[in-house]
Each structure stands twice: as structure tokens, then as C-alpha cells.
Image (cartoon, rainbow, N blue to C red):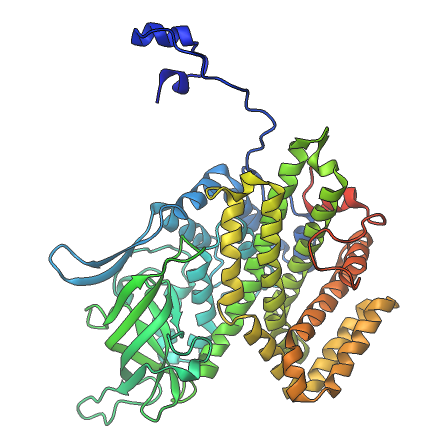
Length: 579
């Protein structure tokens, strides 16, 4: 690097005197102008009026100071810089130590540990299960949503750990041993046996090469361990030897994983497989390699083999899939909230850029076509957030049969739709920034690469739609009751009442025909639910614009392709992110 580059106030003559060279030409060709840096250094909560309103409705006032402090910490420029760094300095695998002993240790940049520690200190892992105050699930969802706007990879182990709690609670012996470490807000990144840790992280292992989403096609097997004088050693809570593989094994540095394997009778079981055996030796979970993923770069995903690995049966033999699906119910909610977070950050960065960038004599935000795109992004973002918080409410009140319907039926539909929209619209927001958005070291590129993981992980779009259709088929009366609840918010809105009637009418469709229409059904259900929630909770200018666009038969081919002449775009964008 030349002195001219290190100090732009130097002239060419200065350079000549310093290096004793012949006169050099001036290298400066232009002034850097009309460029907009990515936004950081702001409160993610104070700049989100819709989220603040949702938290107030949830009665979460007692959580407000802690959440506000977390939002401030996340919004600091230093935190954004950490997020960028850990997605550039990615995890590495050390299979052996210096003397050839197998260690299977994944090394992370220090920023990974710092962001995980921030999340844990904010009590966002176990708080919804431990705290009885109203609004706890809304506060968790808000915290997850705020964190996901800055960095998503660190949310993978946090998601799986949280989702393991309701499953582990059904196993008294395991729960007694792990409860305090799961509830702890202290971060412990050391690679040690469970008994030596202040807090722990849990992962999950289901996917195998030959099966993918078809977990019943798994071949990993579990054999009961017989102990002297104790019979076969099998059965609930018994010890097993696990042999087989997992094609995707998320976050292998977690302290334990919940793993699906077939018991001797050929039925799937769910097993608790720690990283270290109870005797302090390393468990035989051998990491073959780390996955080179499109996104989610800060987080390690791996392929592993189990070579007589130690495991403990959870639940009953043959009930492994229902056990792990209970965990997936929670992780699917996290996918919805995480995708809503990406939509939010993409919108915020796009608004910041267009408010400061000029083209053709105007700020970009003043250009009519750009305003249509931004308005579409704003509507999508608020609708996704409102649906996320509504689902969080259902998880808090799951003793109510109506809320269980939201959990069982709307959660997979929302995962299908919101995650798909994040994939499309992070790309649209990237285009707002043009070439600057397409640069690999920017946040828009990271959001775009990250978005598909939520659509794929914990069940692809087709799997989600099939789950919706099965839930409707199992309990059509619960589905009709859900539509009755939505109808109360629809009022005399003609187009929404038409959607209600259409969805009710689908119950008459033969099941063999209905399955092929699953994507249409799930999409229409989510859009109707979002419209009703916006009509109930958001200003009329938001709900009116959402309904006018989303239920126009011509909407949806590309973002911004709707008539904004009757939309108060200025007010809509100011609500989305106050200037």
C-alpha cells in the first residue's frame, strides 16, 4: 500500500519527496459520493413500532427493560461487525489432537462464543418454560426475532436446545440431571463431560443419506446394553449402543444430541446421545466432515458416524418419531420467527439505502416504482411478524384447544409460507442495493444465502403442506373452529369472506385430490390469517394495503407489482422504519 493510499491528503509531489522517485501521475480519479453504508448502530426495538405494539398487547411490560437492553446491544456497530466476521471466519474441524487421539472438535471464531453468550445471558433459551409471567413467549419470540436480524447461525444450537426442553421433561431421571444446566443463563463453551458444565447446548440428528425427510427409512440401529444382574438393559431410560450415520448432524459441538435410531424390533426410537460418556471418555460420535453450506456459514453442520456410541432411550421403543416431532413443533416455530427476522432486516437495510441514495435527480425512496417495491416489503414484514407473535401466543396457552389448533395447523403452514417469502424477498431487497447488495461481504448477500435454510430445515415446503392437510383431515372440526375465529376479525370484508367460504369448501374435496393442492391451501390459509391479524392489530392503512394487494388475482408474480395509488406509502414506510 502506497503513502497515497494510506493518507489521501498527500499529493503526488509528497510521494515524490518521500520515495525520491520521478514525478508520478495523480492517482485520484474521483470523489466517493452518493454511496450509502450499511445501517448499524441503532436500537432494533425502538425503531420497530409494530413489534412494540405486539409486546404491549401480550402484557409483557415486566420484560421490557431486559429486552430493550438486548436490542441496544444487538444493534451496536460492534455486534454487526462480529456477525459479519463469524460468517467469514467459519468453523474448522480438528479430528485428532497432536498425538493422534480422536477429538472431533470444531473450532470457532471468538465472536461465535460472544454472540451465543449474549443470547444465553438474555435468558432466551429456557425462559418460556421456567418463567410464569404473561407474555413470556411473545418476549422470547421478540428476542429471537431481534437476534436473527443481526446473525442467524448462532440461533441453530439455541433453537434445538430450547426445543429439547419439553421432550426432556418427560424423562424424570434425565431432566433431574440436566435441568439446572438447561435453565442456566451462564455461557459455558468448554468441551467437557456434562457433569462438569455450567450450562449445556443440545442438538438433534435425524437425517440420513437414503431417507432425507423420510425418517422411517433410517438405518441407524440401537442395541440395548445388558448389565450384570439387570436383564437386557433395554426399555425406557435404558442404555443402548448406537451404530450408523447421520448425513446432516447440526451443531456437532453441542453437549448432547437427540438421535433417531431403530431398536431391535425395527421401530424408530429417540435416544439421548451425549458428546462424552458418563465415565468421562469421548463418546463414539465421529465427525466425518463439516458441510460446506450455501449460507448459515457461522454455524457448523456435519456428517457423523456412530460406532457403538452410548445413548439413552427417551420415551418408549418404537415411539421415536412422535418424540422427535414434538421437538420439531418448536423448531418450526423458530423457523417462522427467524425468517420474519430476515425479512425485517432486509426491509430496514433497503429503506435506509433508498432514503440516502439518489438516482435520476431524486432520492430512490421518492421514485414511484421503488416505492411500490418498498411498500410490498413493508407489508410482508409486518404480516410475518404479526403471525409469528400470534403463534407465540398459542405456544404460551397450549392448554386451550383453540390454541393447540394454531400450533398444530398454522405453524407448519406459516413455516411453508413465511420461509418461502424470505427466500424471494431477501433477493428483491438485495436488488434494491444493486451491485452493492450483490457483494459477498455485505449483509444483503448474507441474508440472501441464509434464507433458504429455514425453508429446508425441519421439513421442506412439501412436508409442511402435507402436515397441514393431515391436520385438517384428522380434525376438520378444529379447522372449522379456527376459521370461525378468523371470521370474527374479517367483519364484512367481502374478499376475505370469500376466502373463508372457499377454505371451508375445500373440506369436500376428496383426500386423494386435496394432497396435490396442499401448497395452494396452505398459502391461502396463511394469507387469510395474516389479513385477519392485521385487521385486528395494525392501522387501517396497513391492513387495507395488505388485503388490496394479496387478494388481487394479479399479485404475486414479482414484488411491487400492485397498484399503490390508493396506498399511503409515506405513512406505511414511516411506520415500518421511522426516518
